[in-house]
Amino acid sequence: MKEEEKLTSRSSKWKRITKKKWVLPAIYLGSAALILTGVLWYQAATDDIIGNETDNVQDVADKQLSQYPDQQEAVPVNALEENFKMPVLDENEVKIKKQFYDNNASSEEQEAALVVYNNTYYPSTGIDIAMENGESFDVAASLSGTVIRAENDPILGNVVEIKHENDVVTFYQSLDEMHVEQGTEVVQGEVIGTAGTSIYDKDAGVHVHFEIRQNNEPVNPIEFFNKPLSSIDVKAEAAKNEAKKEKEAEAVNEKSEANTANEKQQTEATNENVDEANAADSAENADEGEASEDNSQSS
Image (cartoon, rainbow, N blue to C red; front, side, top):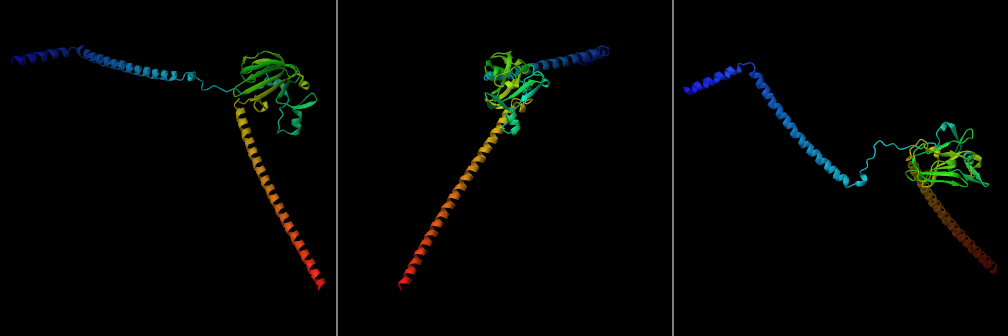
């Protein structure tokens, strides 16, 4: 009985407590606090794990990069290749006075691309650019690069050469003033001098003679203005393939001509043998005729 009275007493106390207005909200708040504490603890533990894994991955990446020191420098993915530009500040103020000598051009165009020096004609290996009024003008770098030559030539005038990638060099001749020296790094469009004259091409007057060369082989600048530097490689490869085809065609023609010559020799030799056989037969027949005639006369 005493145990039942104790249980009844405790139950009555709990009922009295739960009847109070603040009890249930307190229980809810306490439960929410416990849940929130558990969530925050779990999140903190997860962040530590992820952080450690990230650090490990970064350590592995750093170790791999350290094995290739030459490749650590990042190259911009969107880096743009420069296009060849006419070596002037304003293309609308100048004209091309003499064109590049092209072996495939017409005879009139080839004649117009000749330079007369010391009573001798030389093909133009570049283009001559001049002002309409014949005055001097600023000469600018066609591409960014390094100046490898900046000096006076007694025949060509002041000369500047700028080296670029892929063994490409741009030449600027007949300059009056030079604003750069050997070893200078220039950017595209930077003024490197002013147009002048030269003994080599006096008839051109005030001008700049501009050339583009790859492996010291001149190419027509007109074909590459506003095109990337790599376009020269494409054209050179195409020219190489064309030359290879022409060489193969020449070899086939030479072989065909040799076969034709051999056949002709064999035919001539056969004809000679036939002629000799016919001559021998004719001589034998003649001898037989003479012998027959002698026998007739004897009888």
